[in-house]
Amino acid sequence: MARASFAPCPHCSAPLSFLEGVSGSTLTPKCPRCREVVNVAHATFLMADNSRPSPKTPRDVPPIG
Ligand SMILES: [Zn+2]
Image (cartoon, rainbow, N blue to C red; front, side):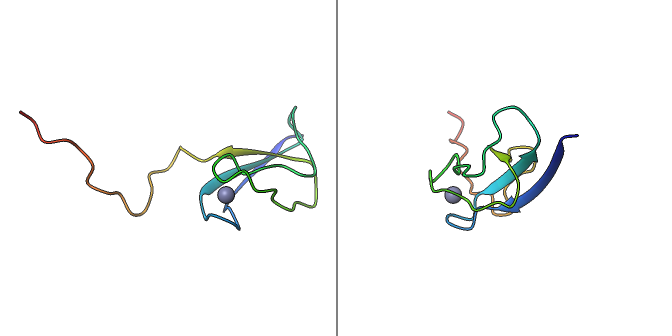
């Protein structure tokens, strides 16, 4: 059965989804942001966690007009 957990990347602290037991899982998954290998105990597929907004949201909305 597939399992999902959420944790920051140990290298760049990007929010990641750790999906175990899904197709594409590997024992040496790479962070989609910094491309560093993340150590895992089980075959895991790493995905950037875009489901939750970043705690520090920069005001990068361009001014209207
Ligand atoms: Zn990373």
